Image (cartoon, rainbow over all chains, first blue to last red; front, side, top):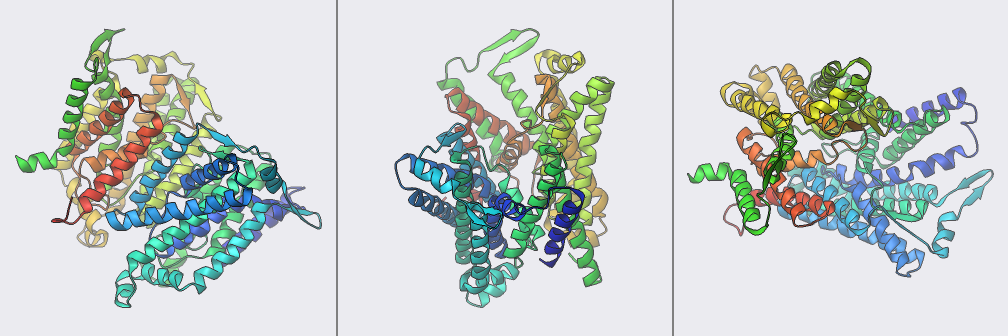
Length: 312
Length: 317
């Protein structure tokens, strides 16, 4: 987590010095808004990674949740209920997927990969491309901003801050989340200590689904539409954020604040590229991949130096 | 006989689906000769199935080694872009060589990262997925790049004995891979790696060249598949070439009886799996199902087959 914070400060400082107009009152509200969707999804991914499982279906789940919100508003429900429905949908799908993994004993990565494709198919089946939300009440919600000084904080930015605080607190304070750490670190030990790893994993998948649903509602809120092709590759961004933030794919190690800082780091880099006049999607992908690779390299080198040997 | 049927269940499934289609769908088995090419559902199946079979067969070693390659589709897109852009600049043969080199090097780098940095294959190929797709978009300048070199389109139309050249390439690759897999120690080494990496290393198998080699092989296969698609269309679409291909390959491997956590894989059954998966997709298309339904069914088959196999013996199956 310290490493990500240093990286974020470095990137912002370098971009601020090298690029005129990068540093402004708008910078942090905009960075938080940009990082909101991957950041929120990454918080959920942290919970599943902590228990040694994996969730590759977040992107498709977010797309489905945004469609649920759009459909609910279209059916005449007030915006608050529609947004809550998006969250409930996410949690329900997460629970279903966790339960399916538990019953079928399919490895998490392939089971949730199946979920990725199945949910995307469901979204495409429901709407060809997107479902516009035409409701004055909903538009009011999505256009709302909080002005602090010169900065204007959009709902997505505030939600990210709130979700980070709640996520970080829950990760350490909720006894089930603490059990997830034990399960992720050593399943056998967890069983000996009287924990049921299966139950813990189902609960963590539910939490991940909830945050995936939240990411979907943020998508719907920011674009005033439900999308069936959007959030493509969100699961990878979320996983990258979680890993750069200090999570291990082997379980037992995850940091909510680190993951959100990593999402901010990626957003700051993307914004830097944009201000430097390179708005190409190709460069964005390459830079993100290079950053993740660099992190893995650094992680490997420091781990080896610390352990002083060739550890697995 | 029973053991053979169980091992090659994918072929049986393929034949059953085929027979069902021939029986129930009028006009399914019709064949015609058009512009020097065989047209109909069988050559269609062979063409689409050969893309999946080529990728899946070249993924056999890395799946046996408990690996996975999620970057196949993105690498297909990058090599397709390299072929089309390279053909514009230096002629089609140079473009083809460049595309194959790009595929092998990209795959080799993934293998290097997996063995040397001990990154999990999942994470390493996720990095690759993002990087290669980005590289594809940069190479072709974003969007669709049409080939101006006539040779590219001519390769796409070239069909010896009425079948597209990709089918013949795949046939050769499958036969060679089957021989290599069953007659050399490659299969043994990869399977051992998948079962216990550290023990394999201590037994004297050097994982570095093996890892680079098997991931370069899958990269080369992705390059061939991407080039074939670019030639067929006469253009490279950096954002859409090879999309959902990883799913097809996984379905083919799983239908062929592969264990996703390493160990047992068979080349022959994997080809059966690829053909069965494509027959399934074709059946759905002939019944008028949409692409999203086909996507859903493939995902369900993937999870369903694994769940069925993971169910403990003696319980209700």
